[in-house]
Length: 278
Length: 274
Image (cartoon, rainbow over all chains, first blue to last red; front, side, top):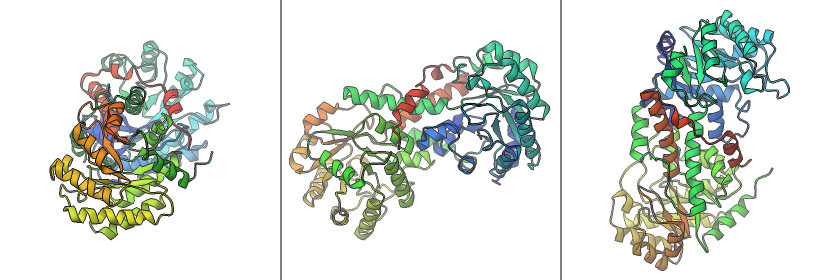
């Protein structure tokens, strides 16, 4: 267990008690330190952003439990603020698989993690309701064995997998809440009305991701709708790689090295990383 | 899909230095290497500063093991020649430089660079010692059994260790030893660069985009430059975009930077399978 893990977890739990906070998702140690320096109260990992950095073309399900937890541990050691990890489906279908992943997350010094109700099977992408609830139950039970608070975020992924069924999504999140999930999250909700309804229909904090459909909603508007936590998914990673790729593509087609995107100076990158180092 | 033979890639890389002018972008991780290869780069380089930054280390904070492990991962991920930025080859003595070159060749790299700056410092070797180090690198490269393209760098002009005349003298000395590529980072993009290209008798690499918009590919080719390196520019652009968006979000709650974003599909398409 990393030093200060319990106190960081307490800070993380406290962040969810009132108001609304932004939790940027970092894809490597350098980006984590940069976001910490820019004032992020907590940072999260992103399985897709991490896959980009490693050159994995299948964003989902290629990382595996060990690699995800090794990456999480590296991020916990990189910054002084709380870290929550994107642990996909918990790396296995059974409640025991999920429990093992959450045990590893606690040991890595994480302040929390997310567990999805996805299967990894394109033909049947979402676990049946009953199993999905049992998986969250196992995750919560394991989270309660942590020496301090451990914020378990339970995700319902219908809207990202061609099942835009708000009622089923809400029913799942309410069931996850009943099992004791600390934070509820349904990425890809269609609009602010859906976000507002979800926040009204559950009593635990709701996480909303920016960069999937909801790009453009301000933090103030999401807070007013009742959202407690805003994460970025892979949006910042896509923005970063996208800016570099666009600059290179322009240079290759015009022969001109005049990046239209704003570059940080060497010194700025180094200062941000240094200042974000615990 | 199997990757092209290391020796074929090494041959291609050497040939790229014989005629024309090519752009060799610098990656900072495996994913960026694949995306740049996917854009059609003919060769790719690692960047010590970018690699360091991804690990949260200052420039000069990467050691030999990490640099070579990274090089091996990039070589395994792309189909094009890869040249590694190996700083001072992580050794002061010529035999240490030779050892690093041998290990670099084992990773499948098509080449690597050798700086005349002591690792992690702003100190420069004296000219004679710098030349001995390049000679040792070239000798080690000659026994690899395939082309292994050494880029001999005179870094003191950019790094404040000596003046431009000294940098050119050093680069010319490296060329005279047989270096297949010489590199004076920061050299002004005018007569000095033109003269170096004309006099060197070997390929000249040039660093673009250090702190402002520089000459175009066409301009640099006309000056005689064979190879254009982007150095840390692309990583700086990436981090700059993320920092600005995160700052706007954290300070003002603004999300507009995240509205226009490269599509998931575009990122996927740019990444070549490895």
